[in-house]
Image (cartoon, rainbow, N blue to C red; front, side, top):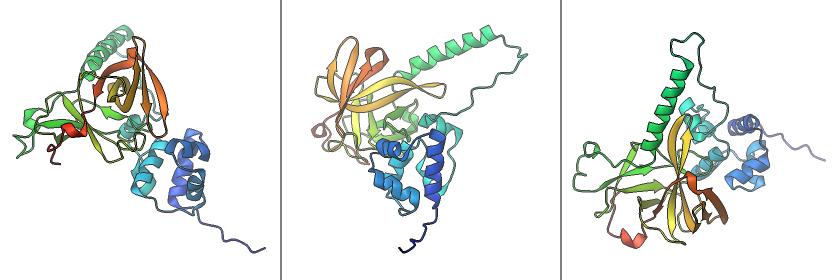
Amino acid sequence: MSDQPKLEKTAIAQRVEQRMEDLGISQAEVARRGRFNRAFVSDIIVGRKVKLRDKNYVRLAQALLTTPQYLRFGIPPTTEELALLGADGLPPPSSEEGSEQSLEDAEALARAFDNFSFERSSWIEPIAEARRPPGWAKTPTIPLFRSEGRADGAALIRNPAAQMVRGPHFAARDWYALAITDTTMAPRYEAGDYVYAAQGNDVRVKDYVVVRVASRVGRTPVQLAYVRQLLRRTPDEVVVRQLSPSVETVIPQAAVLSIDRIILAGEVIGGADF
């Protein structure tokens, strides 16, 4: 029996193993979260697979609640990036004894801030005229949101939007765009596609929609936006479906901020020039 040469532990293998240890998950769970087969993850761990395609770095990072930059180059995520990823282990806000502000005052301020923040985070701000790049003055400019590395692929909506795109020539101020970053809605929407949605549009069962749900990033209220197909809507719950793999999700109606219809491709022909 010939001795097989032992493969050296690669940098990406070490980083994947470290994240698995931090999260307390197995190779099988990484494969499930990233929608890989188990052999793919095993090959990374043992060193047979050294370089990945860009989309697989993204999917692996989502599965491990980290960033593609960490897996590629070993650059640790910042505290803000970890919060955006929803990762556990962040230290709670510190509180010093003997503070001049009483606990009651602090709690009252926190409640007031939460009320203000949730009210502001429940809608999407239009792009301010002052932020339009030169040459875009006559083109509708709409906010663009991305998942920012979330494992579930939901786009993170924060006001004001960090990015903007040129919308179709007839786009209204209540339109926004989402960047598709995973394959959960393939083949209808592929990774890399943009979809347009209009706030408050009438929706019907079987429509493809954006469901906006109230959530938090760290201590900041935000919206999570899921691209899904609407199956049912009752006073108590909303039932939606992702396509790949086909999975139905029940969302309590109380958590839903809005269900916005995705504008069909035929409605934007002759539209955006990105």
